[in-house]
Image 1 (cartoon, rainbow, N blue to C red):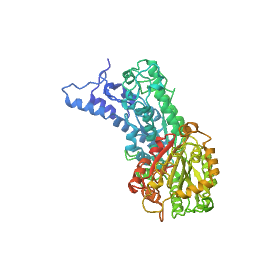
Image 2 (image 1 turned 120 degrees about the vertical axis):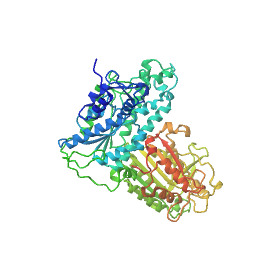
Image 3 (image 1 turned 30 degrees about the horizontal axis):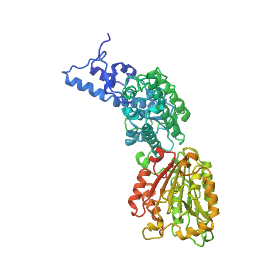
Image 4 (image 1 turned 180 degrees about the vertical axis):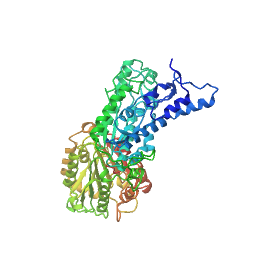
Length: 638
């Protein structure tokens, strides 16, 4: 039998950086009863360590303190290794920061991904077993570390806790049903967990981009976990009556595939994020437990990271220009700190600078102070501030890196607008964003295809004719998958004109507050409709050729993009013009605050609501493909 060592001797070994963690691993065991998902708790190995007697209170407190500090101790050991590597003067590889869960730091017991990569690279580790994406976003230590080290790559591991619902997987499973497929046993709420994880990863990537435009982020999926007798997969499934091991594994495959599919799609939307697919790399027999590979499994996963790191940052001579707050560099290490005007956390909260955008933003800004009287039965629709609105929205878009097109009054024709949208759709790629802003009158025409309950289609009043909401829907259908479309509409009837739904009340029922409304008068709309009935029938029926009735349109012509509307009013309200801006656009500019606004789209809408009078309540609506990442982004972020 091997000789046991005391807790004090083990502490000495742990503190001795020359003792490799592989040597320390044998002194620890996983405490399954107190472990969480991706958060292994440790206990001392009683075969090799003298466990303090129950009466030795001081000894038990010392051993407990060491175990509780396992993450912190491992982090310090790794950071010391980083400094030794960089301070040697021989290292020619990239500087790397890592942040993540127990696939990136499994204290002592396993040689995880970062342990393996540290054999070849200088990795400044922030990982901690049990860390969550929510916590990483709440406490963005990675931003400080990127600043202090001057690293060019951030390695990110997260989503494992979401995959197993933080230990509550049973709540997202249906009871066993022999007629259900593996997919059928997962509730829809499971996808909500993954969507939340994707939004948080997108947030991290965007924050890094704003603070460090030239840093690349590498994330990974997980291999096919192996349900067993563990608390994270096997037991939750068993509690729902899913007892067959083959079915359990099939459900786990579906879970892992869905996470990887979402990660791949997210990575496709930005040049800054690389995604590593680990499926099949660990295999079914190299698992330490339900969620963590063995040392050999981790080593093969690390090889995938190595390939991507070498692709992004080939080896080259290095001159150290940064130091960290966490530990001083070696005495021989030349240090020349690179000063920054603001802290990285502050830069991450600022509007995205054009050079930091990892996708392409295109925008179209439409403003009409008048329309052609010949096309509107003598009515010129005179307004004061619509051109100003378009110019100011152009300025906002330009400030954050959009390539802008502005169409004012006479240039804002049906052909010019539809051509500009079509051109943007053809040029868009996954991850891109198209922004359209409109300031002018809203109108209505007869619903010729019977997809409106009130038999009226909403329109945008362009210079030489109205653009019907059905036509807009067809235009949105031209944008490819994973493209974001944002419409900011300052007109009446704009509450749902992006999706062609009903106007809830006639304008006469709610004339609105004092001021000039941006709505075509009913008397004018009637005359225009009567004179141009054939024209609008032709365009409405052309658009509706893709579907029959409102209930089948989304099935017949589904939108691949994610489309979001921010509009001036609800369906039954009137949008007001002004001297310098329309009321809605003016308040939007105030809330935006030259890019100072910090929240997401929902928060932006709430802030707009708080600034507007009750009779003009802005609307916020989405259609097309759901995009939790888009939901969580800052308004106008490319």
